[in-house]
Image 1 (cartoon, rainbow, N blue to C red):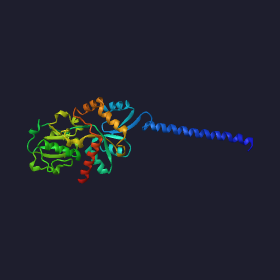
Image 2: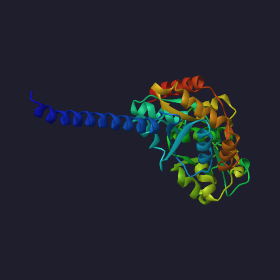
Image 3: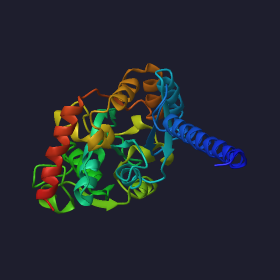
Image 4: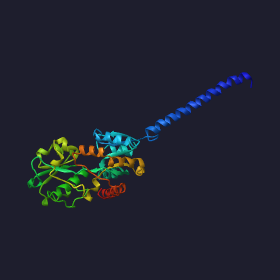
Length: 305
């Protein structure tokens, strides 16, 4: 090869080398950015789906997690039906909005295997009335409303039975519905309404079991309840609210740490208690016990399909 040809080829080789170096550098930069945004580096980013991200305690929680080197992104959803599909599809890392019964219903109906990885609290469900000051004042043949979604309806019926207003032929289970009411042995008539309507219809009813989300919106206070379920009852375990993850992440150490931060941060717990009107009963049930409860509820759910 002539010297002239060498002079021509040398710049070409240098140019090719430079391009190769640039490609490698860009790839490293891109990989670094991805790692920083999805769990690499010194901070880990975890996307948690909730319903009610505007509650102030979530900012407190994010700061508590950041202090432990975990960057949390709170993703807000308008409806309860949305966070589980988002978690199952990988758009979220965790969600925190539901109790075990709700998760079991979702898993069975959708052939999914989301699992609880930590407990937060039980929120007692209450019976309210604008007409009567106590359960004893509700007249024979009065009308009481309950939510029409299956998990909350069953829970509401058990409350009415405990209050002596109805009798359930099945004794009261997580699958009780209006068909299980022994009308001859019951004191009141029961109507099933959309959860938000139980509150707004209260003036036309003797009483109604109202989901906690709608109590204050109806101008009521949680302490106005004339009856409620007992969160300390072992039978209440299926109604423990939980952090949920995909099954393959049930032993994820970062997620376990996030549960621990929620359970142990007094500022977070104070914030939750304020939003709940002082009704939250905080629990630290182990993930293993939560997962066993989920399996039990799922089995019963399948049997009742």
